[in-house]
Length: 286
Image (cartoon, rainbow, N blue to C red):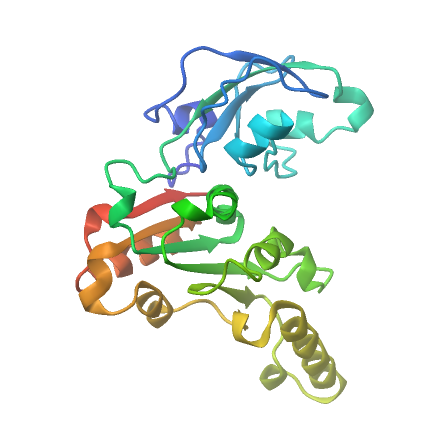
């Protein structure tokens, strides 16, 4: 998360208005002790690491059930040398294991949606751009673990760059998405991956075209032919996800991604006929 201005704000400054749990908790990196287990899917942690005064903010990508059952927290930490807390956590394991950290739960981009009766939610739409998938994968995983709480219809739109390796399986959390949207969960629940930064057969010729065809075929086989598009998502994709106008009173949408994408998607969803603005929630990521 961050600021749209040129002034750099650290995590604590950017999230100063967000709700936080009371008090700090002490954790050891090879185990977690004394942690408030009442976090909600979609929240993040303030993390104070040794020797660095400002906290880092890292999304919890595991679920409350994981913490209760396995005493386990998973955080999304991007390799960022200019972010001191993240750089500290990216040191070799031998340097940081057994260190004591101070943490605190915060954030309001959560499930259940604040102020909305989940009984009224008939369709749930997730729109993720890049690392904006981080809080949404926690919410989706939670609903997968608690299928009785999941709305009847769910649409997950995920736009991501294909990494330098060219291997589609390296896209963040793609394997987890494929696993979740398997048998027993996907009757009226679907996901679609929009792959950007990938060469398409139409853009190439000769051997490059053949390689693009082979790559595209491999991606379709891996993800599923009906689950992948080689483009950014467009307005019509969002409109299709929220369904018919007469049913949109039961839709709740979560949008998370880079600011321009988030602003655009929120504008489309809030402006769609039949949608209620308060049922479109968003969080911006930088």
